[in-house]
Length: 383
Image (cartoon, rainbow, N blue to C red; front, side, top):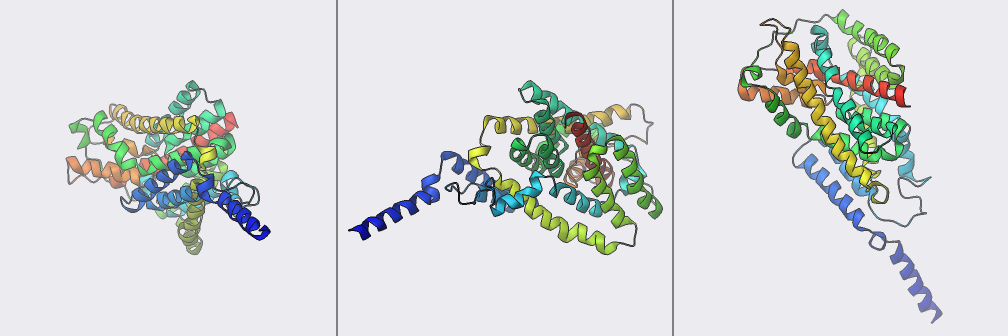
């Protein structure tokens, strides 16, 4: 009899430890979100390098369990908690920026420095969202972390939120990456709404050829100019320009290839998986998370709109033949190269011989620098 009682207690205990016994409606909601991310990444091929790791991470993070077994991402001593350390302490984003720098050709920006202004204008979405977030009751630090979503730069959003609002990092990161993946859906309607048919077919002059010396000088000069103004952005800007110097100097090709390929791939896997796992339903599903998603969409639309509107205003001061096609204004956000590709595709819809991709890459890479500078400004003011 004692034997049967022991067996019964063991079975009961085992069942109490299963995911079925510990599940809540929130877990199933988040699992559905994870499956949606996987569908969009695999079936629709929307940013699969981001959405697949994040989507699977959401599934991992929302398998219900009994606390105390060092399983969950928020439990000290768990493997996921150790991997999440790179997110919490802002280690992964600078490494991502190193890889981005090693992959990026800044020639379009160097050949036409005016494009830097478009990238700067698009950052107004960040500050617009900051104002809106404060109106919704978020404190200044939280509002700053939420606002950076408008830059459409996931690593920057993670870096800044890790410093200003760690408790909101999961919602901010997932929101930022979600809207990055939705660039082809969100931006075209805004671009078409704010431009005329005549503006959409403006032809821009071919970019001049950039010398190798200019390419080598640019990351050195860029580092000095930006970080002397915003030292708080040094972890991101320093790694971005260092990666670009490795690429362009011609004597560190192996290092550049490592940064641009295996290193950034490894960090992307760890970053995406742990960010996804951080959406554990018991800590993630709050009213604040919902507001963050709404504000993220608002900031992204504002960033796109301000980039386009800035070009339209700028054109008033440019002579005929030197005007800029306002369709590239959307590329001022930091989603490289997707937003530049959107500029190109929308332009081709109205003139199949007007290729805007290389022109759009100027403000696009400027947006990468701009979002890092904006993060440094916010960190300097609010940190």
